[in-house]
Length: 191
Image (cartoon, rainbow, N blue to C red):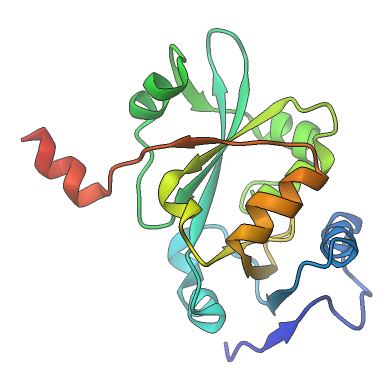
């Protein structure tokens, strides 16, 4: 692929979606610096190795859009990229009966996101605060984090302090830290 890393937003915004431009506008207005890589559409973590190598050093995260089956609460879970979702473990920590993946239609309605482009940046569009952010506590100590700017054809690297500080304050969202055991440790502890 031969990816090029850019500082900030694209100089030519032709062909970019309004939601992607909205991310750059907000980050620039907040004075948050970021690196950007443009790439072919990606849909799975396994397809992102070259992207993450280009943005290194960065802590890779995946984002999952979840729904509490009993009360309908919506959650965006930011999880370190090498960990797996154990919904019972997360549900227990937040006092939920059962968590499941929310529908793509609900994700589009609340966050203006499509499958494959799920990102914390989608909270820009959650002006009613319907979505509660859950953050794997390991991400809170990261120096920088990667995320999509609401499309799966670009990826950003920004400082975790800026993301969990100025960005979340600007979009009027807080977060709840959750503990997610690394996959190898979880499997070892089950035996």
